[in-house]
Image (tube, rainbow, N blue to C red; front, side, top):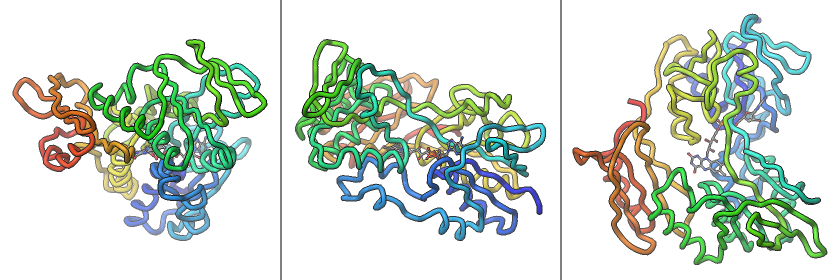
Length: 382
Ligand SMILES: Cc1cc2nc3c(=O)[nH]c(=O)nc-3n(C[C@H](O)[C@H](O)[C@H](O)COP(=O)(O)OP(=O)(O)OC[C@H]3O[C@@H](n4cnc5c(N)ncnc54)[C@H](O)[C@@H]3O)c2cc1C
């Protein structure tokens, strides 16, 4: 048999690439390998489970067997790649070698973890895939008080959703505002106020040092001396592209696995896309860029070399209490911010010296202006 096209990862990147490839090539053997259970699901929906009244099983869209059939592929679940040998076009699963025609890394990003002292560190739940979510839901069942570590996009989305699920939520993060790397302070204040209006309590500045079991739950000791009683802790303190196996194989890595506009790594026949990939210097942990990459890479794998380009890619943040759409200015651009509006309805625009729109953040009712503004936005990767 011909060596298969091998995709590592069955997240949105892996499965969408497989789907796009199958539209163009129905014959080449296709093998997908994943460390998780291989169910098809949309990761963005993890932070909407309570609002949509869906648990982990409810968020699953298809079993791996059904995906295998649909994609005319083999899907190996709970199987972790342990190494790549680019010189021999093979990869390792422990002692087992798998030969590939082309290898595609779609193995995502991992949650940043910090060491926490105390006897309850096992009560901290990162949520970065469906299995994580199932574990968290099992641990949170019947509980009331959730402490959330991190006030980034994912932390804020979980805060809103957990409150919709009836939980009391407190957030701890060492930054001065919510979504510090993404959002203008005026828009951040509107989102924070929205979440506070639902009852969320923010502790911005300190970090969690120690987590201890007490008679009726847990006690979280913060670096500023505060002690917060809670029942379960969710960690949403950031994601880091998985690069270790690629680096060990001699592939060029930076923040992510370095690829060019063809999604090709520094080695022949090895490609990367999705959260793990740094495409022409850009590592964007969102769905829109990975869909563009999947379409372009499918063409290349089917024999029609294609490059990827990104148009404007505004990010819709799922905090229903205070709707938010944000489009950060492209890298290397300089602009001046203006703030309009008040309360929950904030419009902040970033324009260059010629008046051209570079980016924006819209909250509350101002979100309605996004379509008009999107037409003015620059492409992220022209
Ligand atoms: C809560 C949450 C909400 C989000 N909301 C949004 C949103 O609203 N909009 C948006 O655009 N983006 C959102 N994102 C980001 C978006 O979900 C990700 O960008 C996208 O899902 C990444 O897909 P991926 O396939 O690259 O990675 P992943 O989905 O992480 O898939 C990685 C795959 O690789 C496998 N794997 C890893 N290591 C190995 C190994 N060694 N061997 C074998 N398999 C391995 C894993 O098991 C998994 O199958 C959100 C993310 C989260 C966590």
